[in-house]
Image 1 (spheres, one colour):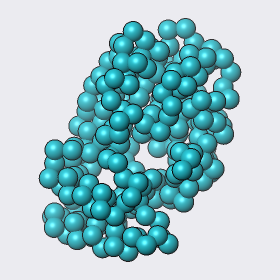
Image 2 (tube, rainbow, N blue to C red; image 1 turned 180 degrees about the vertical axis):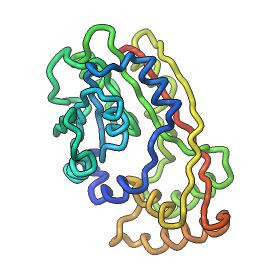
Image 3 (tube, rainbow, N blue to C red; image 1 turned 45 degrees about the vertical axis):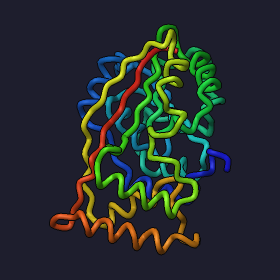
Image 4 (cartoon, rainbow, N blue to C red; image 1 turned 90 degrees about the vertical axis):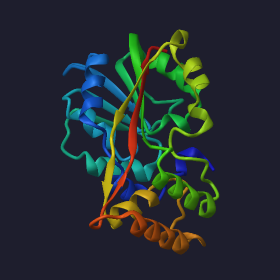
Amino acid sequence: MDNTVKFTGKAENYTKFRPSYPKEYLDYLVNECSIRKTSVVADVGAGTGIFTKSLLEKDCTVIAVEPNVDMRNAAQEFLNGYDKLTLVNGTDENTTILSHSVDLITAAQAFHWFDAEKFKLECRRILKPNAKVALVWNSRDSHSEFVMETSGICHRLCPNFHGFSGGDSSCSEEIFALFFKESKYDYKQFSNNLEYDLDGFIGRNLSASYAPKENDKNYEEFIFEMKQHFQKYSNNGKVIVPNKTNSYIGEV
């Protein structure tokens, strides 16, 4: 399936239930990449605009690049009122942005969908000299028993599940070394544990590209097993999902 359509029909759950990013990471990003009010940031693979919103709240100009029409329309609604936002129909390989015009490129929860070499060429085209690329993921703690059991349900019931974000082979250290200039990049990890009630936990899991949609044969079983899983670990109607925010920043 074309990566640009994998999230069709997922926009509502994505906007409602996907997590934001910790303040410590956002402060680090601003300092590391010298983000100012005059900065122009290209947020590539912007989805419904969760990370875009964090950038806009830093009062910089943001060009949000998103190829999926459902996700882009959701971003338009979610980000309504931000006058320093431009939403464009583009891809990692063709952002439609003017050459050498942006101070920073971000890709949040998105790089694993890209063709790394073609994205690198596009980054070089649109970045100003010496500007950086920031890749970031919210990733479940794979050593957690809770997360391992969640993964087991997905492996059984989601044919297109190959691991949670950051676990895909396209996110290997080798790929990062090839992507960043002279294999140099700054890696940092931030704690970002996530608390969900039942609706939030189900919605978060349904927002994934691999999760069954309502008319799929495994949908009801997926919901049932996730509910059972939630009940097993919940305390006062909530579960804590161990989560880390992983950041990679460098020149390309």
